[in-house]
Image (cartoon, rainbow, N blue to C red):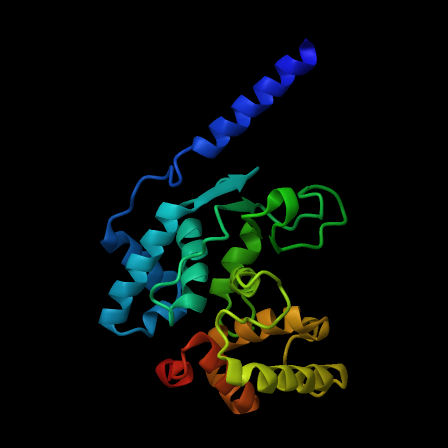
Length: 259
């Protein structure tokens, strides 16, 4: 009897959790959103006024369709907008794109471990795309989220990295070959270029984050960070990689816009 009652309570609790408002946060005026984005998101400042308007609309659409919650930490409107901007930046070349494989973004105060614990010594993760029972969820460190936008010279952005993994996952597998974004004629050239660039990293002959040499999946996400954070530098040091990423994300003139 107790077991049946417990099961019913679990089902009711889960149903309540799923039925919570998708965006429980008060709506921000567009003027406030623009002010925060202009202050915090360098990518946004380089857009034309027309593109800024579209970017804001996509940010609002993302916020309306995704729960963003702090886990053991307080988050503010800026944190939520940084998450939304991280989502929009990689897909800005695809105006009709929506993250259908994401429902929640969970923000931890700092690093966390594979059991999603934010306490203890062994906490190596700054970001993660959930799988299994955590499918549809993304986990981010608040510290890493903010650092990704305050440091504009290090070529790193954890939140963009995780959203690129989510894009990679949209074709059914996270394998570093974004079939949803990549035109068929570029698949083999992309794979060949990835292998070449990973070998350069292994031979210590590259300025790309060494984590990119882990596998093709991580290379794609790390290279995307570089592309969106320092397109000017990527174009100088890795022109073919810059060109290929420009085609994948349909943002071929990013370095030109940067200047």
